[in-house]
Image (tube, rainbow, N blue to C red; front, side, top):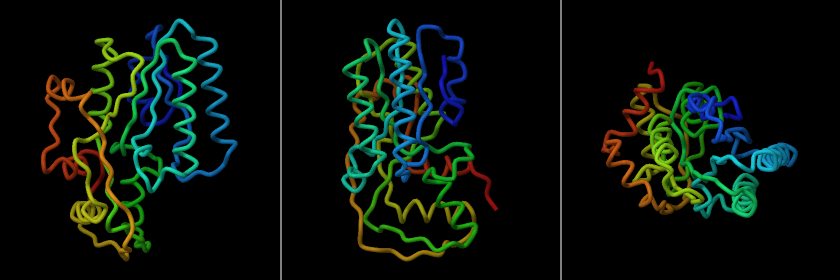
Length: 230
């Protein structure tokens, strides 16, 4: 069963008819959202799913941003922590996949790459935190890694970071997008932000078996794969 209709839900469409696994991919898609009602709606839906599906394995997608000091006090991260704790305490069988920033075809204007691309194309001024780093992984690679654990029933009832093995500085991300679009952005850099480490040791066997490599051109290859150039 798949709950949701966004990029993640669509990618996991093959699980729609899998009776013993629930892909919970419905929730707040904008990490800047401060509307409590939106978060409460997701929480109530999740509670009902757990209550009515005690014999199934719940798959929930959290965020690697939980490790980001700059975002730790945001409504989004606080909500994700609350959800994670509830699942650990109430679900008998679960996977908590903490996902980094996804690259993929999506109409969601709030994803990291969509946000930068839109503003660069529209020539909207951006404020860039020059010391900030972000982790980016392609939706296809994320699915393959998650599917590896679900198919092999590995590390059940575990929190698993599904992320790139390296972080990118925000100025570097902007530079790659500018090269891809062949268009310069309008922005000023401010002395803010920091890096944080994401432990990807659990997914290393999956990366090896699936032959997923985060080479130097990984980010540019994602831009070519998922985003139209000028």
